[in-house]
Image 1: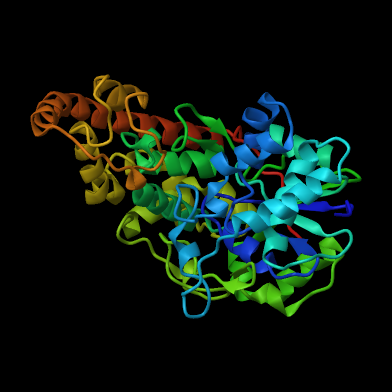
Image 2 (image 1 turned 180 degrees about the vertical axis):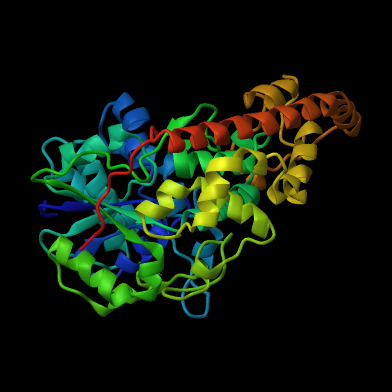
Length: 451
């Protein structure tokens, strides 16, 4: 394979803001190489933690791909999504690549390099998957890379490995985004945050740019903050999800102009490797441009009063991205009595689904039998749990009913303590944000819209 001078279009999310939709819209462009879903997300993690720890040869590379990118060949594995098994207009297409074909192209690329480096790992994965599907690309194509909340180290890798990197953030009405993130947490039930407040996790990610729901420790995000300042080969811009849906041709024309590529009609079509995609399994069923996604109300998780309280605390985000206006009545409530408004609980605090998963956890449904359950409840430590990040995907074949009952009875009082802790932790976080807004000491948003 000839080594072309590839560039990067790195898509960044702002919570569940439609970044995967944007990947799907870029999928069919003849100047853009993409992978289905967000398959490209773990590539630098795999290089750092697996590939670079071994001798870099063809045998070890194939072994690493088989072990950690098996979703390429079987989308039902943990890092896949059920939507990829229902592709095409009739939802009868499964997105998976033939393993022999993939490794044929991968080996061809590997043998064309004198020294196979980190950059080659990224390129070879993208090319091998797409060529196995019969797709070829023009000179100077962009690789559509899902930067999606990855650490700054990986953004640094991109600018070290490729001569031109453009970061495109997708933002969304913050109240909608917070509602969608609560729904996402509630659907998948990430084990790291099962005993945390889903609302606290969502607001932390969107306002504080700190992810609490996926790791044991707080994790720095770059949702509304550029990884780097613009220079001669790095640029960062943002687009609104609402504009992608309602002003699609105008927005995608701006994206093409920014990338210096021609506009193509496929930019209004949601596909992966050319097959129609119908949105994430947990989301409203839709394909491409529509009003369903942006008109979701999240009424099952947030009351009208809840949304108003969230709107007020998202004051900076709403004003910067020009989403919500604040009249005199709103401002008086915000500045004078807002702390009193958050004394009452929120509707999502009483999610039956979340309580069921918590009760299952206290019955050791997701645990091995070596450690007590208390550390999970009080300290969010998951060393006692089975492999897998999302509880919805974890299955346990055997669980002693006697042990489950004893575990639940002993754990329940500890759980009640955690509920009280969550109540106060969330409100302390909100009041801290409120004070910073009033004193104008909050983090300033500094990201430019695409023009």
